[in-house]
Length: 399
Image (cartoon, rainbow, N blue to C red; front, side, top):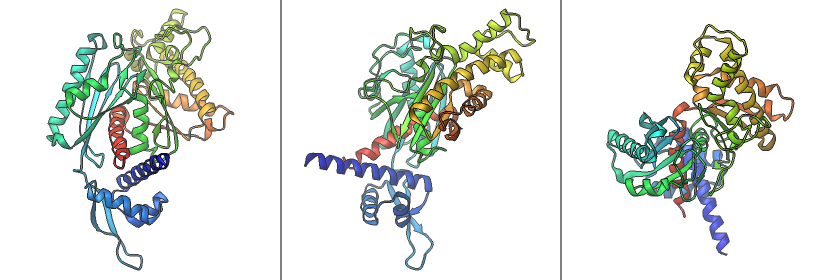
């Protein structure tokens, strides 16, 4: 008996999330069209909409075209029903956004960080940035529905604890959710940065409504993966999953920051590209471009057409395609979304990975799956934080 009630509430929450997402995506929509688009009965739609109207999350706005009877009443989200804040943290920067209930971004701000400054300094920077963004738009803090944090793993996502992210020295068992809840006085939701990137595309971007989406992030330092299944992040609440950066792509390969050898991250991140170019020059290759001492040098050289740096990029892309090919064989995603600092600064990387993947004869999904850059670029993690807030709201409405 109890199990039946739990399932009923869960189903209502799922249906409500779908209804809210479709209204957000369509802008204005009638009850009849909602029934068609969701596959739900008109009675179910009526019950959900009545509750959403009562709570002022949805408003009626004008009439649609008649198809022989009464003109249908159109529905839209109430943009002032609440606000959501999203913040992403990576090894070099913070990005914070605030949106209204329609997911319109009202303001965003990016800030550089130095991981060597330590967790306390960076947490203070994060809090200050969030406060700055909220104050800039001057909204009623009581109407802020929550904060979604996109952070590096590994984490205990249920408790909101950053366990030991390898590229953040000293961040051991940091209770990030508890800290932000106490200091900001709002609900806080935490997920892996790459997962938030994928969630942003599922909720608001080119991957909207696709059941199986794999996300791939390439940075100067970190490489991450994530899977979203029917709108749900596939991850253990107390640990990691889809940690593609630490899958092995070369037996007895280069040492990785995680302690293993041959990890994708050690063979395909920005630092690996620098190493490949330096190795080529040391072995006799010539170049008129700047000697690549940093990731930015590689980016500059590639954009200037330097063949040595382009060959280094090709090696990184090859190893990335090996790891993604393995993910395709295991997961068969309908869509792969690509992003991260490496791809954003060096777009040839995306083109090369896609080319290598589509050369594969097996699995069929290597050619068949859709491939796309993340819709919102570097803001995707923070916008995914906004999606975390809206997702939690839709699940809690009828709990």
